[in-house]
Length: 53
Image (cartoon, rainbow, N blue to C red):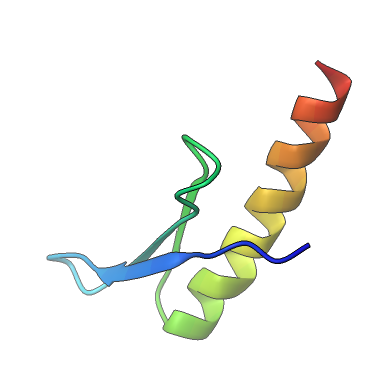
């Protein structure tokens, strides 16, 4: 499944990753790579919860 993510750097230097198509699916990381890894995990968990609900 392909979903778009959005990466932004916050005022503290962290990268915030969101998935616009999944409301409330947000993660972060100290680096872009870490933020992408974390949002992938968040997307999987988000979809799992939706499937169970």
